[in-house]
Image (cartoon, rainbow, N blue to C red; front, side, top):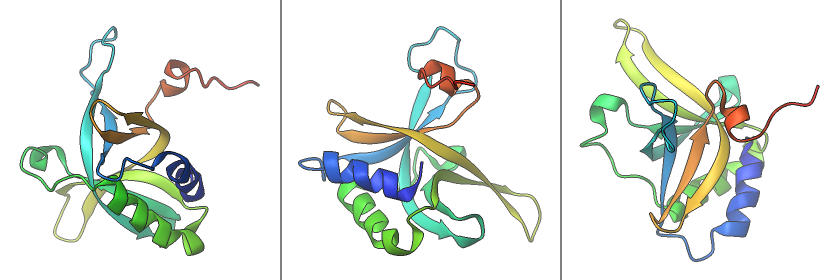
Length: 146
């Protein structure tokens, strides 16, 4: 998903939802295959630009910090930050980004995962960005026609 695509979505669906929080839906690796919603809703806490990879990084907390981590961005703040990036970074890809433990004194490993879908939960008052994972195309009915 590109920056301009999420901006178009926000322009259409944000009204009346400014106080909603923004989360990433991260698939649980240990989830049983028949579990209906095998995801954890992980707060998006910041937005950064990675010029070297032409990506907008939606920062999520590493697993060990999630319980006491920073709060999720509100939809208003999230939208405002993305809108400010639009003129220069229109075609940058959206990825969730999680910094994992340092590999050594000079290198921190960061896991970037593409965002492939958006969902609004009126009940939970949040917007969820769905990360790519192996098999998601089939689950969402997005099969490729060859």
